[in-house]
Image (tube, rainbow, N blue to C red):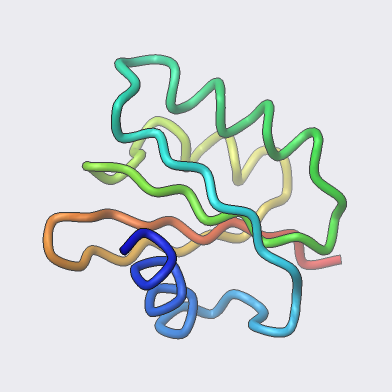
Length: 90
């Protein structure tokens, strides 16, 4: 199911669809772990990979951090699952 959710979500965002994708499910983590885990994962990914963060709520505190680091992002909510596509524009 998670793959279906992220596949459908990326198609509904501005994220580059031709790039490789990595999925990070943070729904079971309490604050601030979703934010820190997402930033750590982004630091380990190459600049072409799109990170699909799966959460149970919009990551409001993550958005300013992504902007500071030069990432683009878009969040889609579908059946209670929140998926944020995160990518670099380089």
